[in-house]
Image (cartoon, rainbow, N blue to C red; front, top):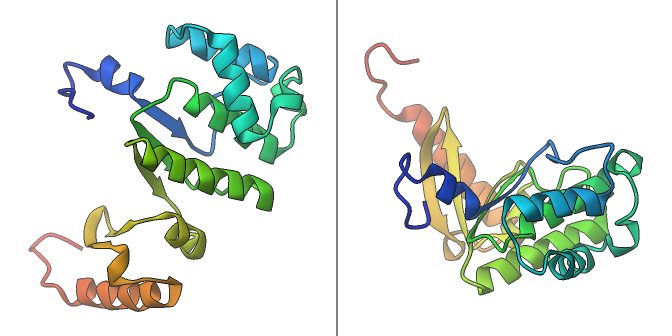
Length: 185
């Protein structure tokens, strides 16, 4: 991962990943800034408070830094989790259903972060059931079925949501037609 052999360099590989999932990985009783300082220490960040200020502004939570995570709405908790993931400037971003709980403003921020990360040379991977938002943010799409990749294509192959829906339907039908190996469902 990111040039590091796994499992020998698992810790080093993890340090190059920013992850946001359904769980925020934040401590509810701590304030947003206390959480971010905690993660900054884990990543041995220099000038941590300056970086915290930068990511807080980037995700729009700079006015909520002193609030306990448990007092925040789901959308603001997701913004705080996003700040946590951005804190150490990872080379790989992993997002699981990234738009869950986000309002329109937060969704726009998230899409902008995807673009900034790509421009900085980072890889942005996300899983989502929200086709339109996903396709607007993606330059490549994979379709998986039963743990197997059945489609891997660039934006040019599908251009928009309706084009992707056609590809999706065709690939699922083709996967259904594929011969099954003995002992496989």
